Image (cartoon, rainbow, N blue to C red; front, side, top):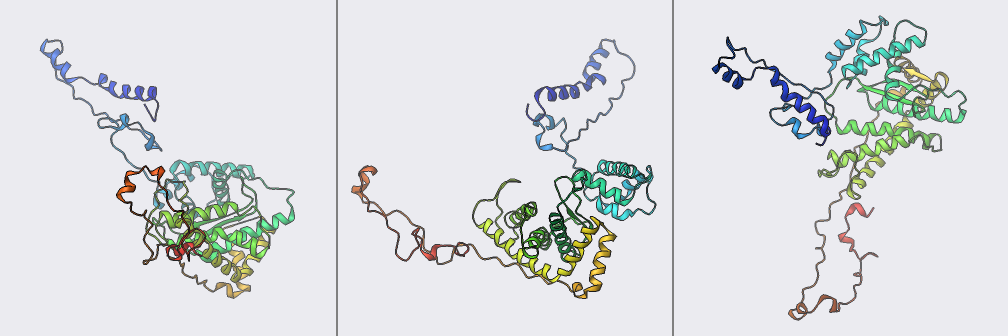
Length: 410
């Protein structure tokens, strides 16, 4: 059978059905009593529950989940903030750790983690501390362990080209500056130019408060943060590299979802596509392109206003390689004290989409001319039709300007 494989599923079902052998069968018990083989009071039949767990319920065989078997689905969500606080406190109580470790930051960093993930990160944080010659873990060990699990091992480049190192520092400074001044609801937990996994550098931002809904404005600002690295390379360094490619992929996917899956663009039609599929060529891609173009212009305007912060943060990254939490706040406080204009709130422009529906007065679609009764009796291959020519006043494809949707004419 599908999903689990025939042998494995049959074995499981047989084991479930054979539970009756360990429990007194009522009908057999009655027959044996009639013949006097069994005497005495009947034992109560115990209640047996069979429980299973999976992360992929969609692949379970239907024979396994039909009524009478594993027929009740219970969804178990990740723990909320209060649950994570209790879990973290429990596992930290069994490990030596910094008594001043910020519990609220640990709770905030672990949004979406399962209890076993929290336990694993704490264990690996203690290993990080041991590698550094310490007998207790700190908040930095916690961050390093989480990054190692998500991105890979830390692998500093010892002989790094100075030009490449400077460009990566400016790239990450662009992300960090955009995140700070666009997303006050998020905090910057780390900015680094130490290679880890396939990333030469990265900036981590965490929501200050756990939310259950995502709004259009938040998606737009996240796209702008993703575009900031490309803006810095193109407008400030005057040279483009392969570095922003993954950022642009993420921004493009978010823009396509914004328009085609979340109905936050010019149409309320949801594109029926599976996760990971590309939307059809046409209005959805046109609207996503418009969204990215407008957000790119807004990101460029923001970074020009906050340019002193980009230079100051990039220099700090070049000098120190990595900035964490309070260290980032100190760097921003220094540059904001020297340039008070940075504290001015950035006012974003509203996103404007063009209509892509056909014009109300667009001509009717073409239909073949009616045939006479004589022509209807003739085979289609023997009939002669006049050659078709594009109508006057149209374009090279024979389309009248009035029949072209506005979104396709720009």
